[in-house]
Length: 333
Ligand SMILES: CC(C)(COP(=O)(O)OP(=O)(O)OC[C@H]1O[C@@H](n2cnc3c(N)ncnc32)[C@H](O)[C@@H]1OP(=O)(O)O)[C@@H](O)C(=O)NCCC(=O)NCCS
Image (spheres, rainbow, N blue to C red):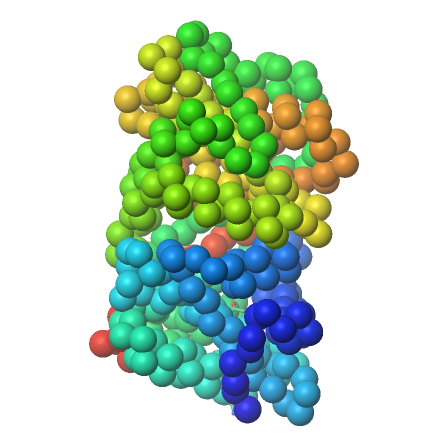
């Protein structure tokens, strides 16, 4: 039986999450899964820019498969992010296909015509042999973007960070934990908009999000509610304007720190600000949270500049990730 889960029901959400986590991590020696509290926070938040639906496939009172739909409400309102999982001992019986068909029904109800999905491809596997990517490709999805996830073991030697800290002249690093100071928040929201526009999106067809102060404050509030600590560093230009930013995120219940967005705006590139931002934020992390074992980041394949910085810092590739999409006209399920 397939039915909807109320994410506010803690027991229901926890059972759903256990199945999702087991399926998502199965067979991968490394690589991450969305941490429980981060996901709970994301799917229970009242927000005006996204909504989520959780569905489960039950066998008796055991959840054996999961479906999550993420729906953008501001931009990309014809899209739905679709994530299907089946626990390892129930695979190869058509349950994945049934959950995907359920996703299609829900999308049709909501007038959503483009499905977006993500699948890891661990090293040693091809996209046609790994069950997740094989499933998506077999159901008519096409690859729009390839990324690598990378891991950096901590602590990073302070001497290495000191050596990699570039001279950035009159640019100044400013930092905060949690909420952006009021005097910077408008400029910070603009950086998020530029980030959405500039980050590699390959052949994915969605449009970039437009951010404003309200959206930044809502993100900060969601993080705070979920117990996520965000370490933010921005680069301030001699004129006072913001030239770039980077975010490390420490999620409740998850030891590995997430290296999120890093951006330097076009006008300020060429001053090694990307490296300066990352080094600065890592120095804070190592100093203030010395027990954290590692940092994980994602790097679009072909984004050589960011890759070079990450490699210099000691990040190593864990696995490939594919972002895929499928328009309703292309049926395969
Ligand atoms: C991807 C995933 C959901 C597939 O679940 P599943 O229940 O095994 O999916 P299905 O049973 O519908 O299809 C798997 C295979 O079994 C085959 N199959 C379906 N019913 C069958 C049956 N009754 N007897 C034999 N084989 C069957 C399908 O044809 C398919 O074969 P193929 O790979 O040669 O095309 C599962 O592997 C998983 O959870 N992976 C981790 C999460 C993930 O990566 N999700 C995908 C990204 S959204």
